[in-house]
Amino acid sequence: MRVAIYCRLSREDDDKIHENDESESIQNQKSMLINYAIERSWDIYNIYCDEDYSGIDSERPEFKKLLADSESHKFDIVLCKTQSRFTRDMEIVERYLHNKFIEWNIRFVSLVDHVDTLDKGNKKSRQINGLVNEWYLEDLSENIRKTFAVKRKQGLHIGSFVCYGYKRSPENKNKLIIDTEVAEVIKLIFNLYEQGNGVTKIAMDLNDKGILTPTKYKQSQGINFKNQGKNIDYWCESTVSKILKNEVYIGNLVQGYNKKVSYKSKKMVNQPKSEWIIVENTHEPIITKEQFYKVQEIFKSKTRRCKNGEVHIFANKLVCLDCGTKLYKCKNDRGYIYFSCKSSKKLYGTCTPHSIGYENLKNLVTQKIKEKILTFYNFDNISDDLFVSNDNLDKVKLLENKKETLSKDMESINKAIKELYLNKVNGKVPEDVFEDLNSSFLFDKSSKQKELTKVENDLSNLKEKELNSKFIKEQKEKIINHFKDFKELNYDIVNSFIDYIEIGEKFSAVKALPVTDEICRADKKTNSQDVVIHWNF
Image 1 (cartoon, rainbow, N blue to C red):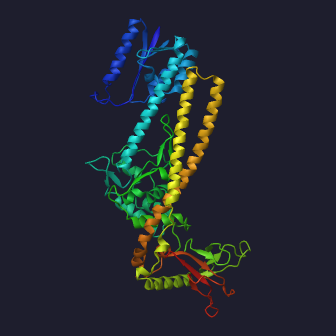
Image 2 (cartoon, helix red, strand yellow; image 1 turned 90 degrees about the vertical axis):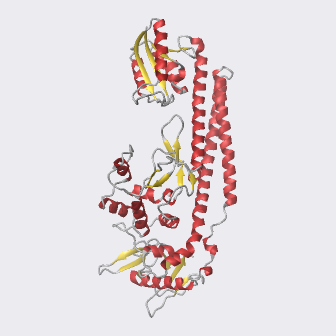
Image 3 (cartoon, helix red, strand yellow; image 1 turned 120 degrees about the vertical axis):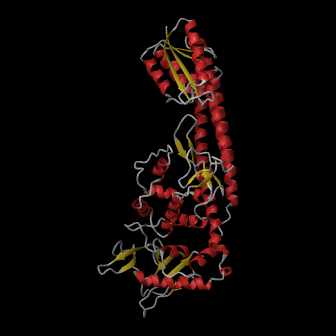
């Protein structure tokens, strides 16, 4: 009889002297299995060893080679120390021990737990072993996940790689310190975006300056970092966007934004923001909170950029006073720049042009902003109510309670499915009853999961609103103080002071307008029109 010996160990061992040495545990497995084979006069065909691989991993190189050689029937017996050394995955147990190995006329034997597929009577024992092994791995995975969660909540960085702009502290590998070599690049990106440059324009500027991309920089530092992107040599829009949205640059540690589909899979899925673990002030910031949250507001406006990646100073701010449609930027043959309603007769015929010259509007807004600065330079005159978000605490509490209830329901269903399967294996539950109950459990699980996903998304949205709004009030004084002596109107100033501007038609009938708005009335003598400015405060 020809026998193939398979050994596996799932962790690094302290008894290794050199990296390429075999651990003592692997050597012990080999010795035990070789002696067992010799005692039975079995010819050893080959010894297959996988070290530092999990029993749930079906991509183990020697394991895959063993299966290929089994299919080719290069031996008659597969010999392991225990069934769990071969696999901890119940699906693989069923596929190979109870199907493929029988089909290929391969016998499976394990020493410690006395598994032998030649003995048809212990099939249920093998199945129970398979379940126990898989549940052990599932519990182990859950314990590790909880340990990581505790460390994350303590503000400890546990990732394999640190974020661009930071490096590990020499004193504590779980703490971040600023990487001074590239911190200025982060500041440059935020400053350029705040000034009205789009992510495309910023990426082009970084490439023109010859600045290494985050991936290339890490590799230049000797870090074995791999990126799945198509082109790691050049900055692109997505890289710039990720940097601009990352709270790590204001000193907050953000972890848990993705996780494995299951302990059996290496596939990662994104988590709703409500599941992220965010710990504030864990390390020194590169960007101020004021600048960061200002950039987030610009992102939300979804401002259109020109072909060169820049934006005009009134981008996404102008709307028609009559139909509510946005005004777009135009230029005639003589180079005159103006704005016109998108629903005008030239396009759809549902409104009039409401045309206004770029320079005229710029001068008017400049005057009104300077007047506002002078009027409200006493900060106490600015209403705090405009900066305070609605109180969503009750809604958040209700959603968190609902989420906790649904999570417990899911755990109960999963436990019931496990118990049902075990009862089926032990013969306590007939096949038809198992199918009915299992289908019912799976349907309930699917329904609960959909409901849980919706609750998580709603909770994420509410928490995000609260997170952003608490900083808005702090901006009141800083915005006015920062721009009190401005000389030239730009996108940054307009975006800071103005929510939107309504443009009326020239020579139109006088409309009743809210007295709380900044209104510039139409005047036939000056060929002007109604302009209503809606302020951010």
